[in-house]
Amino acid sequence: MDTTEELYGTYFYHGHSNVTPGELFDLIFIEQLADALGMTTEAVTLVLIDQPYIPVSGKLSAATNTPGTSVASIVSRKLLGDARFPFGLKPSAPMGKFSKLKMVPTTRIATFLGRWVPFVGYAGLIITVQLVAMRTRNKFNLIARPKDRIQWTSF
Image (cartoon, rainbow, N blue to C red; front, side):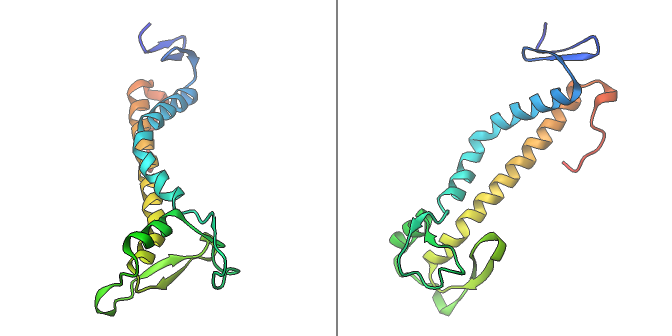
């Protein structure tokens, strides 16, 4: 048999026989996600390096903010030191937990970059999931019988 065939109203796909349309969609999604994982490594890394799992003693207002610091924060402070934005600019950066996220102005470049790093990662993950969903739908619609095809979706 070929990699994709119909057999008695079910599908045969990459060694899986008697696959229903829903199972076919799941198999294609898993395949597309596996293909895209090379893209998501960067996004996952950006999210993970900014998790505050390094304990810090004497942190101001630790009760309302995150309790520790992150690898991204430490590295950006070591690389940039006390570099500040020119002309007294104070761009805002997110601070705190997702449930109590607030925008706080800062003059330090390292602080600004360290706080925005995970959001770049989150954006990369969202884009990757959207691309995987779109590719899954397109491939599924190429393989599936007309009555099983996805007519319209937001992806």
